[in-house]
Image (tube, rainbow, N blue to C red; front, side, top):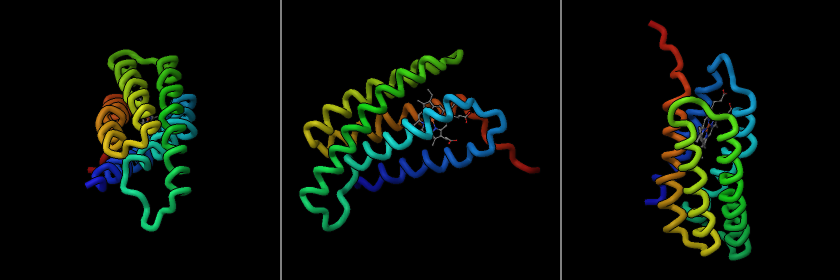
Amino acid sequence: MRLRLLLAALAVVAAGEAMAQVVNHDLPVQAIMATGVNPGALAFWAGGNDPPEGETPAQAEARWAEALKGAQTLQVKGRELMQHSRPGRWNEFAQMLVDGAAAGEAAAKARDAGKAFEIGGGPIYDACNGCHKTYIPSPKRLP
Ligand code: HEC
């Protein structure tokens, strides 16, 4: 069942790849995504997904520690995104990321995979997806 979240994560990453086609990159925002938001989200999502097969308790602990750091990074980066605000719903999506990640931090501290799954596939994913859909032009299709 947690596979759904993994698939959602892959969809976001795939959307990121499609963005390679964006011609006029917003370089600061692109850097925030590539070095902060995306790795932070992947680390957090790993907390909510099913553990890898044969994971030792020490590995589980390391995975949760990364998920926790990821949730903290997402809050910092969400606030940074507001310093690059755009007209429309930009700040709303950035705030959704901050609030979702704050709840995610609590779930990661509690090692609550169910909650982490819910938050990762809910507000955090909705923030990524909502902002991308609103602000990134879809690649032109050839006739
Ligand atoms: C407030 C708006 C906003 C939010 C929230 C947001 N993004 Fe982005 N993201 C953008 C914009 C705008 C770009 C395109 C930047 C450019 O290249 O001009 C982008 C680009 C990306 C890229 C491509 C970066 C590259 O190297 O070209 C990835 C990957 C990405 N986002 C992942 C995510 C993930 C994962 C989340 C949620 C956890 C997320 N984003 C949340 C606005 C947002």
